[in-house]
Image 1 (cartoon, helix red, strand yellow):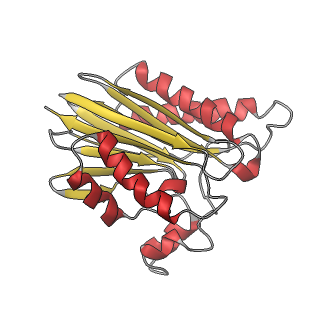
Image 2: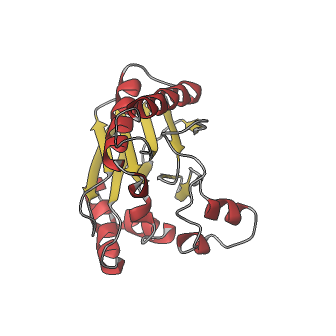
Amino acid sequence: MKLSAYCYTNQGGREHNEDSVRCCAGEDRGIFVLADGLGGHGCGEVASALAADALYEGIVAGNPDAGELCAIFQAANAAVIDRQAVPGQEDMKTTAVALSVTPDRAVWAHVGDSRLYRFSGDTLTQVTRDHSVSYMKYLGGEISRMDVYHDDDRPRLLRTLGREPCRPEAAECVPAEGDAFLLCSDGFWEYVYQEEILADLLKAETPEQWAKLMLLRHIRRTPPGNDNFSLITIFVEE
């Protein structure tokens, strides 16, 4: 198995970037982490960097299964909470999504509304569920899936790193040649829909090309002052 990947992050229309990405793709191992600090809670960039480093280092130390990856998220949460003792950082929080890929296992976990999409067998699936009020309304049948993108409650997150209890969700699969993955923050997926993600993937020959096709859509739609946005694209090759 060979992995190829491309990562991109942008501060958008904000004064600074509170997203953090970590990306390592090798011949038989890939580790990918994306964290989105919450701008309304202060020091979001500190929280996201701290969480991203803790998750990346925790995955590097082993080949975690879903349960072990949840434990790594718990450790990342503890690291963010410990740092809240620093004056000015008391309320900092972040979302996070992480993916570890080896020949026998792809395992992922998340907290918050940073997403992971998986392409396999000609089908693109959002394999994470947003921990937001809007997504719960969608699951409960109150609004449509498309309404999630624009619902007034979308910024209201039910789970983040930086508070207890930390309740990550995790899953795993066996990766296959031809699979692809996309990790992205809400500042990206808010403007690029799932059907378009698939359409651009089917046109792309590399993860970089896939990302740039989607970013062309994104840049045409974002208003002034838009949120930070980040993505990581991954191809599983022979």
